[in-house]
Length: 407
Image 1 (cartoon, rainbow, N blue to C red):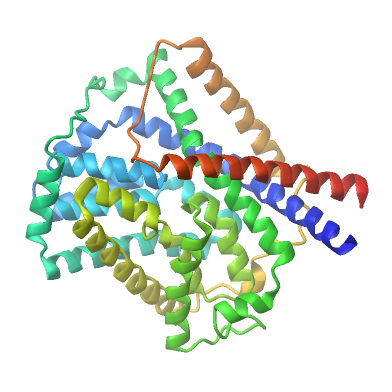
Image 2 (cartoon, rainbow, N blue to C red):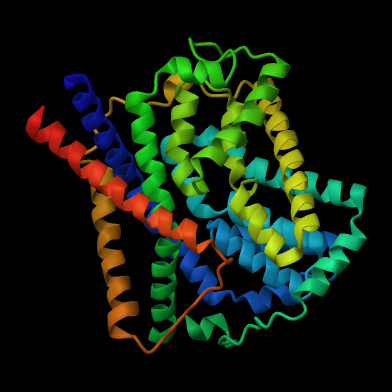
């Protein structure tokens, strides 16, 4: 019993410590993302993406880079851009960039995994886009694309937002109130995933033995970094399976990715795990609702093959330049999380900024509504996730009481 209580306290402390480490990065990323989404409208994006294919891919990548990292928001924006004239390949480029190349994800990865994984994430995002582009040209799914466009014709989701110059809008309180509300929406979209992801990471750190990961990811652990090609391939395939089981978005997955790397999973396996937020069942179901099941499975196949190819290229590319970090350098356990350092002051600063944004957008300027389209989620799933998140809060509170007042 004492052993369980000790691990419970350690798990809760690790979960909250992880979140404390990342809090300012979340806030910074979502402030930047919210500003961009208000001042660079979707209508302006789609006007430039439906012309020359190479230009469309480049612009889709750029617009995805400055967009939101929430998978559900990215799916809705991709559908809207595709419907309004963007080519299929530039829409896929936007989808991949908006979930893999975004600023806030890079900041979180740098905190938990280091600069090599940040470089791997951004290079990998570009590789995903290039491989997908090549595969689309190879398979040339004209019929699927045509049927998908026809399926979207009856939807009415035209952008009727303010089309004034961003230089004018950036000077008005109304526009900043929209930024504030978009910032609130960003948190609303991810709070359940983040809660579940950080809680699972703490539980895994405290309760799951290394032998479990050595069984799941063959030849991992025990300081082994010399993996054969087939071992690397197995890690890359198992990574998305683990992501599917944990059912967490990319932002919430990063602490768990750091734990996997610390447990000895290969660089390629961890990268594949991070890339896997678009090859899970909720995304498959949403794409089927938008484009039909045939196109949804085609997109799933396209993204999975691209994920495998990008992860392999990154692993062997980094290996050839001796850039793969030592797993022992990623320390996510046995840390003193809550201390007076730069993280403390950054968190206080961004908590104050967040408080002001909430006041401006939800109390002072309630006459302004900035609603971003979201992909249709399962009501049952969302309700279940909400209650699971509440259970996580009870678990975390109980664990902290055990650690600091009982043990």
